[in-house]
Length: 264
Ligand code: PEP
Image (cartoon, rainbow, N blue to C red; front, side, top):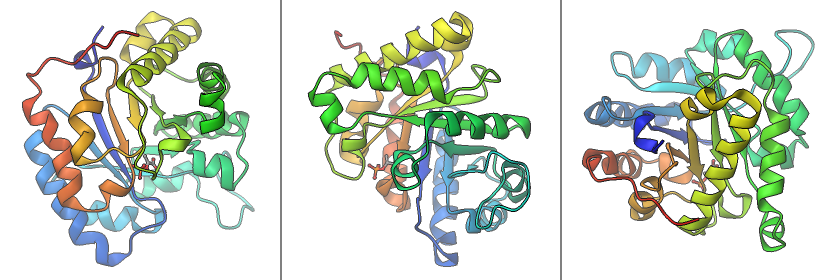
């Protein structure tokens, strides 16, 4: 199955960036993305403080909103945390979970990610589950095993082809300007899909979107996002400016160009 049979998703991860001054930029993204609404789902994941205001500011457009994390519990004594239900209440339909910055900064294990994914599913959120190897792991030939294990352990039994999106994000490619080769991305996406098929069945694996993330920019988007088995992107830095984010979406304006199969 080629990526062209799954509707691609391009999601912007604003990380800890954005205040009310960013609302106009979000509106520009939402309006510009309307041109591509038939062929690609477009999402912005702002800080939790902005979700409700983006929801209002982008009303009447197809822009999807996501959170960047949620707690595994529905409510309670967890100062500073946000529950999945709160994200829904603010207007989100998805949540990024297991981003490498959280796995590193907050020492999140794949098991805790799986608990959060289950919490997201309980309230109907799509979980965008991030996996990816470090530079040392890639150089020592462990990338496939590390990522395979993250996929296996980060997904609960509630996972379906529709309620999870995988984002393959090599840690060394995030915010560095470096990207893997197209062959390496294609191979890893194949490894991930095979692991999904093994655990959840062929139909779920065929339906699930696998995004690439890590230094996606307007200049490399066409090359990276047309790889067979790549169903869109999780974009960090380049999602903060409407001009850059819309330029990345622009590659779907020429979607009739065949996806590129690279020999693995
Ligand atoms: C990310 O943080 O998910 C990401 C992919 O960042 P960047 O695009 O800036 O590398």
